[in-house]
Each structure stands twice: as C-alpha cells, then as structure tokens.
Length: 165
Image (cartoon, rainbow, N blue to C red; front, side):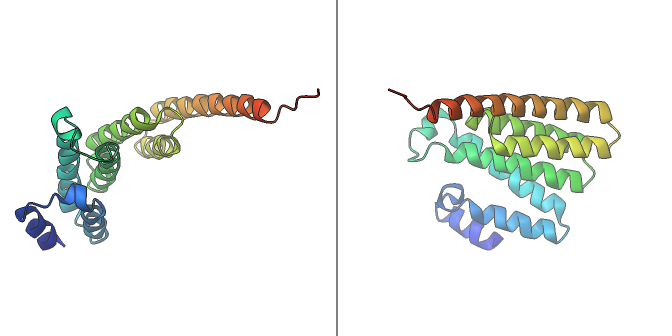
C-alpha cells in the first residue's frame, strides 16, 4: 500500500483527494501490527496535507470544500490514538483536544463525534490520574448535552404544534 501511495504521488495523483481512505487503512493496518510510530507519521503527514489543501489558494480548486477539514479532524484523532499507544501522553492529549476543536469548528458544539472524543479523552485523563481534568471535560460534555436536549424539546414542540382553528 505504501508503494501504491508513493507511485500515485510520483504520478501526480494527490492521494488525499483521490482516496483519503487509503492512507487511513494503511495507518490502521500499521497500528494493528503495533507499528505505532509509522502509523503516527503517516497520519500526521496526512493532516499536514489537509492543512495545505485548506489554504485559500488551494481550497478554491476543490469541489467539496469540507474534505480537507474532515481529513484534518480524523487525522488528529487517529494521531492521538497512536501517540497514546506509544506513551506520548502530552502529544496524545494535545492532538485529541485539537481533534475536538476541529470537529466543533466544522460541525458545531453539538457534533456527536466531538461528544465521543471528549468522553474518550476524559477516560484517558482518568487513566493518567488526572481526575479533576476528566471531571471538567465530562461537565463540559454534560452541559452541552443539556443544551442539546433543551433545543430538541423546543424544536419538537414547534414541529408538533397543532393549530386548533
């Protein structure tokens, strides 16, 4: 798969635009083989490529402008996983927080993936003996869930309101 990616790039085919799944599938495969550093390097390169694609002069050429943002968010998340696997806890936390910020920037505070990432990070923080930080993150998540639930009720009330006339 590495050869495929390299050959494609040498032929002028931007793998990040053509099939973003290829590098991720390779990174997942590397991670399953406990080759965490290789997987990390691959996804961090992919994140860098996504950030290059997000520059205004490059973004203008893309049909789907959300693609690089999605690649950045997924890449940061996966990088944090591989960093945790390697015991690089500060880097893992930093990239997970950045992945959360990326998800929120792209899809708003109510992004389900951001909720999941916050809970995963809170679990890590507990694992690392940082219960207060984990509690703060869970409280933030719960506050957002409460806001989400209250919004849902308002929307539901409006949708199902029946005019009695």
